[in-house]
Length: 431
Ligand SMILES: C[S@@+](CC[C@H](N)C(=O)[O-])C[C@H]1O[C@@H](n2cnc3c(N)ncnc32)[C@H](O)[C@@H]1O
Ligand SMILES: [Zn+2]
Image (cartoon, rainbow, N blue to C red):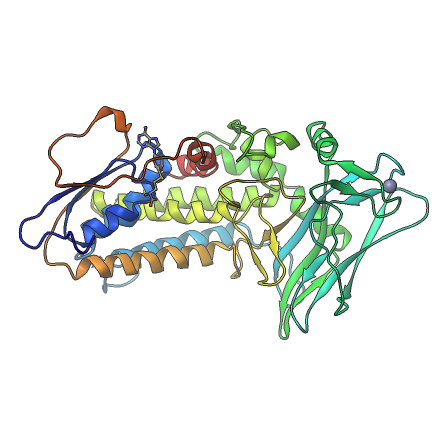
């Protein structure tokens, strides 16, 4: 792009399949007058956040609401994101119970099923490693009697020769007592009959000497799940209410309907639903307040789209499709190889805390990205524009272009629209 950058006149650039706007960003930074398009509304909003608004507002400042100091766009996004978080914390002071002065960082959960052969109800585990690392490695041990239907859990230090073997793999579910294997297909039909039950396995804390894991007490699971009336009240204030849109199933990317999760609301734990709903509700309030603070329309849109990106990043790390990473001690994204597979065990982050998956960390990432994007546009002399469009490429484009770069979809290899619906259901409730 640098080689092609216009030296004198402003040249016109078009990307008809813009996606996340990578080409448009480079073209705009190189001084082209840019038109970038995508049919997908999520991609369109990402392009606006990463290219259109930084290009438009990079050289402007406005007084920050809490001081007379002029602030750039990223500082305003930071201010309002922190405002959203403070309101959510005030509204939900006891969402995650403390242990003395410590607040929990993560909760490790699994789905569990009854063994068809011996009747033991056991957790489906992809891994038994709760924590990895030279000094802190801990594994979960499932304990069961010769008879009876339940198994309890404890955590022990991992033996250096520890071989990780969970109870759920490509073959299916392995009963830890009678060793019977239930095929994946059979586990899927158990899920469709709504007979997979959820179980809290452990709570992960950050202490003075690093992370620790402890089994939950009897109240902990109850506290995360018995939130129905608070959820109903919260979503009464949010357009479209609970995200009950049907999950479009296809064989490769969205496999969760095969396990019985048929609408988006079923992908979230009740506590995740309440925390995310409260963040969405407070984001809407913040965007409403921008009017009374006298922000011009473009600033309002730029802050709104940026805070919607924070919500997008938040849901990407907070659902029952997010795996625990015992080595990095963090949450993984719902995206795995351009798909969203079913997770036998999964992790819940403390959304109001300060570790990976929290609102604060996602806000920080968006703010840092905004800051870098604005800085890269602020140094440019020319004021070439950026126009983002949200239409079908088949409609054609007005005007002449000097350069067209296209990265079209490759056959049906990626289900862009199905995968991005996961984000769209939340973004449409936020903006
Ligand atoms: C390979 S991706 C582009 C990725 C982009 N270069 C980037 O860096 O993010 C193809 C894009 O084409 C979009 N697309 C698919 N069919 C379209 C259509 N008929 N009109 C416009 N965009 C379309 C998809 O939503 C997807 O974002
Ligand atoms: Zn068994």
